[in-house]
Length: 173
Image (tube, rainbow, N blue to C red; front, side, top):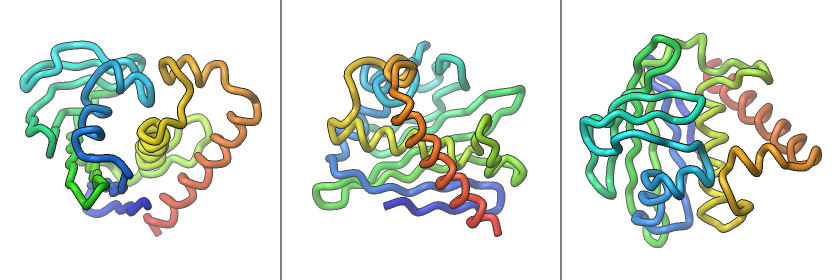
């Protein structure tokens, strides 16, 4: 289940994962697990430390309350925004709420296939996290298995990306 919203410059995505909070926390904060579904990360991964996602954003880790919340700056293209991820236990599942702000409305979404909007981009990553937690991803780093994916898998991902981008377009209407 995905809830999505964009209000007052804040993008919010809420997802429920069939995994306990500690497992989800480790998947989003442990470099060896993060690389499996998202991107390689380097740097000082403690509060006050700076991180860098390979080929993407970097920033500072500003707060960390294991296993409930992590907050960081998202520095990319000369801009600085804030990302906060909160995890709440719900029975045997975990509710993940990601907020990214401030985000200018013209960036959410960018329905271009070349540059998906922030909402669609985050949602694609959170879909990969679900597949990772469910044991459905191939072994190895996400960037490597994506590079060797079959044309059929890439086409399916492209269709999914367009559907997600279309959903974000509806959120803004």
